[in-house]
Amino acid sequence: MKRNREIPNPTTTAIKELILTRGLRPGDPMPTEAELMETLGVSRSNVREAVRTLVALDILEVRHGTGTFVGQLSLRPLVEGMVFRGVLSPGPDHTSLREVIEVRTGLDLSLAPRIVERLAGQESADLRSCVDEMTTLAARNEPFGEPDRRFHLLLAQRLGNGLYGQLVAAFFDIHGAVAPSLGVAAQQDLDRTAAAHARLLDAAIAGDLDRYRAAVLDHYEPLLRVLDTTETALLDPAKGA
Amino acid sequence: MKRNREIPNPTTTAIKELILTRGLRPGDPMPTEAELMETLGVSRSNVREAVRTLVALDILEVRHGTGTFVGQLSLRPLVEGMVFRGVLSPGPDHTSLREVIEVRTGLDLSLAPRIVERLAGQESADLRSCVDEMTTLAARNEPFGEPDRRFHLLLAQRLGNGLYGQLVAAFFDIHGAVAPSLGVAAQQDLDRTAAAHARLLDAAIAGDLDRYRAAVLDHYEPLLRVLDTTETALLDPAKGA
Image 1 (cartoon, each protein chain N blue to C red):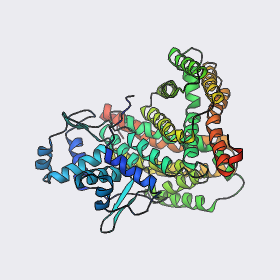
Image 2: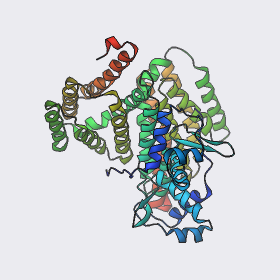
Image 3: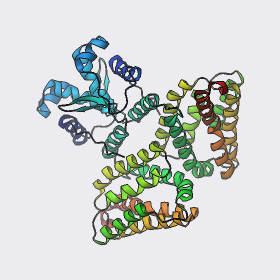
Image 4: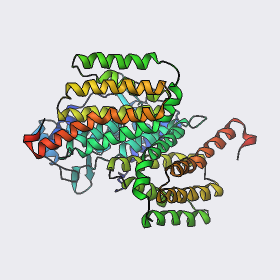
């Protein structure tokens, strides 16, 4: 892989250094445009270009009518870039989306031992309510992205590693943004996916790591099957779903 | 976690749609600024702002003196944001860096079964040469970031999932950019880290998954120990390294 490094714009670097030397934190107000021009000795258009770049990276945040603030340093730029990549390069076999699902599977499997350790032996009201919501919505043939996302995020939060939670959420969002181009999931897939979440939770509470791992794989199976079906349909329309 | 979504700039959205409808691919030349102004019916400053945002996300790439091209859609924006987060919020216990190391460990462990499956039973010249380089450099007390990075990237590439390789490289780079603020690793850590890479490779070639997993954990141990030592030093300077 090519190491793709843009030449850093000196003004963006200077603004990042200013944030560090002043000890500013996410959400703190930034100096005004005029103050940045004077402090950094650069033109208004230089400041504006740099701010635009840093906003795209969520290092700064512009609240219209209020001013500019230090950003949340979230994974939003990752999601935006990867969603576009997924839409741009679907490929006949949905390579981008397959890769996203593999990464989601990998993240879930790598969290498995600690999730099971933390959940074993006790019912989890918050996770159970996500599963119940998904089951109810699946029965009505309605999509359940919101409780599904909440479920995965709550699981990741059990680890006390904020970055993991953000990665899980980011890849959930990338997947959710790219997948609709494949068409709506079938009813039985909704039922099956909801049931897989119930099995994930039950296995964790039972402290059964092998069963938990099997449930992770089972959970992604309908998502991969949609890709296979769509691929088949593209290659041979008569065989399509 | 807050779902941080910026209101999309209509011109950035329009440029992304233009890339899609024209079927442009990474590296393809973009229309000129004048053509974008006319096609999208927006002002020059609008186009420039949008291009600046899309360059930050690696969706576009400006080659000075040549023009604007579709970008590589790499994980560079992730690296840039996360490095700044790591530098901005080191915390007394290096939370950001610990989280990065945990994610790296998780990615490596999640790849372990397939890596071992693919490498078992046969020497790998390219991976072995990375290990040999690391060992030689460690013996001279020199850092070995380059062969180290190549080692992890080659491993991830064995899976045929480009996104995984990019994630592994991205978190390697984030780690590498944030860690130097902790000071140089000790000689025995270089030796130990080089030896851990040899054990990773040997375990994979032997087809021994348990030994491979143990080597992954062992590989990160010196990196975590540096954090613990630095933390102790901050809390009680007399105990520092």
